[in-house]
Image (cartoon, rainbow, N blue to C red; front, side, top):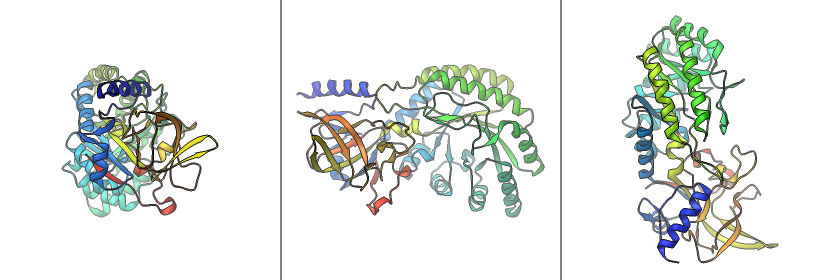
Length: 419
């Protein structure tokens, strides 16, 4: 099979499984101009995560073209907190959003001004609150009790605290992979209680920055995102009447999803941008001094990353072929199906140094852990692999290593590289 035929076959498979079209060279995956074999040699061992900086850059450029010019783009560090990735994105986006003191330290190491950072999440510790106040980061208040703790810490440190209210709206983002609003939630202040919270901000003399209204994540339906955004703006107009000052920033979250599984249709970002431009036109007249923020994580980095492990054993058990690798769910919980999937589905997995291969077979890819949950691919067709070949899990740039139980069975952690 010549290279041109391989490329065409891979493109057909990529479209069928909705996976990122990384280039291939001599049937080997290429990450930012480096073949996977060469990259594995350069890193020195498997397993590892590799992130393609050019793909991250291009995703941001594509978003800039699709979204209104006056919308600010923030990166949610929780999607991938690797310092090199965050450093790279800090040069491309307008702000960073954090969810822990660890992420705060990573963010503060970048050139990004702390005035363009926000801290969200329930259960912030007193230490984290003090750190955020000292750094000048906007704290997204999750409850009335948290407001009191922030006010107390600000008074004790004699530093003015910048705050916004995270709102739990009375609607949800339909068809989202993870719903974050619309009912009883640990996140944010219920919409009907927000006016009282806003009054308390004024009483305590805190610096009011705005609102954070986030309703869901991992959504591939432009119409659902458009509907949620419309309801978000309507809610903002109502809440603005109770605000202790101008709403300087309105964080409308994101929710933009990426395709993982056969049948997934990529999000039509153009339609999302067109609808948002209409909403922004209305907002410019009603809240002319408000800056609108889109906060994205997975959408910026998810398709730019791969997880790579090596076949260490090939076994046949009652007619079924198992490829046993040196990686598994302890490194990539999401690919194993144990990170929120109700019904397990296979991530896009292939043999990275034999993308097409001369022979094909149906195999299951498992890791070295003593549990049947350690499954990276269940009865998938891929190139016939031997010991030493490289298994690649695509769509692995977000919620990979940092969302996995790396201490399980005490195996060494994988490396991470930004290529």
